[in-house]
Length: 250
Image (tube, rainbow, N blue to C red; front, side):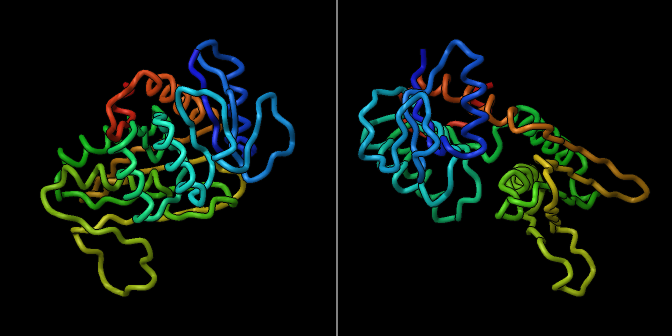
């Protein structure tokens, strides 16, 4: 039985993680971290990382970028593998995550969905095949409470596509601010925020007289919880410090 410390246990994803754990027989939550203790949980909840005394095998983080420093300090101090599923990190914070991975194993993905990671692989194959003959645009849609834009997943998809293109590309986030024709070496990334959209990512390859579209739609948050828990069970048996991704899990 894999023992999990859940960071962000009082949030929406924390509740989803709890529900998924209740249906599994390979893991359990032994403690939680959050900025608030209430409502009560069937496990102890701490607002300060240093107060936690429970033994665990791995930490799962679905919290907020503001918690990163304390999270890393606790994980490295106790030599616990980390599964980081929080999004919205700055470039500096992402560097801290990679630095932490030199001390403890870190499972880090901008999206824990199996389908999204398959989408990334399909997009890479399409980009490698189409080369510079098609313009590439990414459209991402999320609920009206999401504060970061573009989504980390959209940036991950763009990065994966760029890794196979024959020449460097730049990202264009805001076309209305620049009045000029589209450059061949750019990838447009557009964000939509509204309602209760869980998550939708579409990659458009627009060529001469033909369009190819790849799309993933998340119907519930459970797909992200399942991916994170699968990552936690996998990471509980990992010892080598480095960054691990969904590719390692698969």
